[in-house]
Length: 110
Image (cartoon, rainbow, N blue to C red; front, side):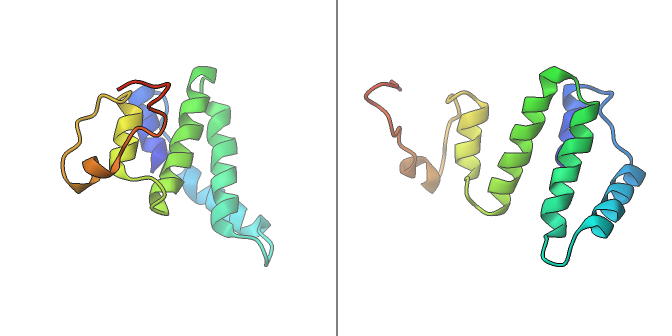
């Protein structure tokens, strides 16, 4: 879970299994026939967890949720994410390294 990563930012960010099961049960009951339980759970998770975060960590949490979904659907590779989190200083090995090029080299130097 992405929420486990939050405990690395701030040790007070710990959520119980009971919190998740209640949230899932509530989301399941409120979800209509044409709605996705997964999407509604993700939205409820974002809403409820964000309430308990310090202001400085809310954007980090939102970013982790988006990147988690991108990874789930293979829309961002581990190499691309590595470049993002290391501020471009990641060393890339293997076949992915040759396929990643700077798309805006004219204004962003290597």
